[in-house]
Amino acid sequence: MSTWMVYCAEKSREALLRALGVIDEGITACFANGCDDLRERVACGEPGEYGVAVGPASEGVSDINLAAAVANDGNARCVVLAQEGVSGSLRSRAARAGIDLVVDLSEIPEEPRARSEAGPLDGGPGVPAPLVPARRGIELPDISQRAPILVVCSGRGGVGKTAVASVAACVAARWGMRACLVDLDLSCGNARGCFGAPGKSDLASLASVDGVPGDDQLRRLCVSAAPGVSAMGPCDLPETAELALPYAGAVLDFAAREYDLVLVDTSTTFTDAVAQAAQMADRLVIVSDGKTGSISSVARMSGLAIRLGVARTKVARLENRADPREKTNYALGRAEVGLEAARVFRVFDGRQEVGDLLSSGQAYDLAEPGYPFADSVATFLAQLLQELGRLPEHDEARRAAEGTRSGRLRSLFGLRREAR
Ligand SMILES: Nc1ncnc2c1ncn2[C@@H]1O[C@H](COP(=O)(O)OP(=O)(O)O)[C@@H](O)[C@H]1O
Ligand SMILES: [Mg+2]
Picture (spheres, rainbow, N blue to C red):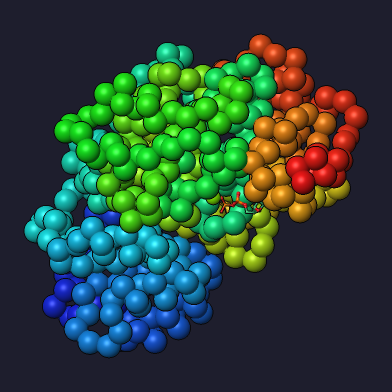
């Protein structure tokens, strides 16, 4: 049973409740009396207690501004904007504003659909399809016949998704794997910047062909970023990001056939592309950084993923910028985020040097064993691959999976001096 705080015009209430019934199971809806009332009630709740739905309202602030304000307040489990007839530009504005889902009420069936005991997105008979994404991730062959796909996501920016994904790709390459780093932060992605931004890889260009893009076309988008690491995406121009949204599934399907490991960096907001990746992920890694509010953003992200049909067993948590001197508190926040079974990994704080090396394009150097940051990324990657039965035959990989260090600890200071 989940509680939704709802604000919309009287005449839209019924349609909005039907929409929420499709998104979520067993909902209880409370109607707010106005914009301020809505924000106040959500702010007074526990973090993540309420989902918020803003529907067509006849007066006052615009619906998108209200939904954006609630998302920005940060206490809601997730924020849904529901409108009649949704344009592409509304979806992108909403995504930029941190709104989790945009629902087109004109696409909601008249009759409430049958519910499943097992959950709304498990694909069983009579189970409603998810509203977002419109396109589901592509069905992949069994993991023994393709590369594992690890998707790194978070409900907040700046927690280290790009840093972890880029360095993990380099660590894998150092173990002899051919890694593909796919940047699905389509409008603002900077993963290639961690390698000195080699080449161009504009995923929006896929929209210029009819139908499903062919392997040749996808291969042309793979640029060599570092020895053993190829990169794909994002889009050259932020305003064309929307064109690439439908192709995320095809890109990942291709990468999983061509490479040994696919690492996916994502945007903070759950776009269609990120949702497809989440659905195709062998592991969805939710990154947080221990700052205030990080538990509620992990809760928002995991709740969304699970409603999209991602199995709880595929969700892992990564606490970034951890202090190596402190023990992991495995219990912390687990109950609150509904991920009691999820494995928690830690990546250590590498301080300013990590940012300096990544911004000067030195991800590959940063991945060298012997540095606490790189070693903790290596351990996280090795243990995930081991769970998936895909740990490569390599001494460093085996050591990393056991969590033992490869040799003496080094300081990044020297590397950084070389970077200057
Ligand atoms: N473990 C870490 N130690 C030190 N700096 C880090 C660490 N993880 C990330 N950073 C730095 O924090 C900043 C934000 O990280 P980034 O990967 O861009 O976040 P995101 O992709 O989630 O928005 C970057 O400057 C990055 O280099
Ligand atoms: Mg990023």
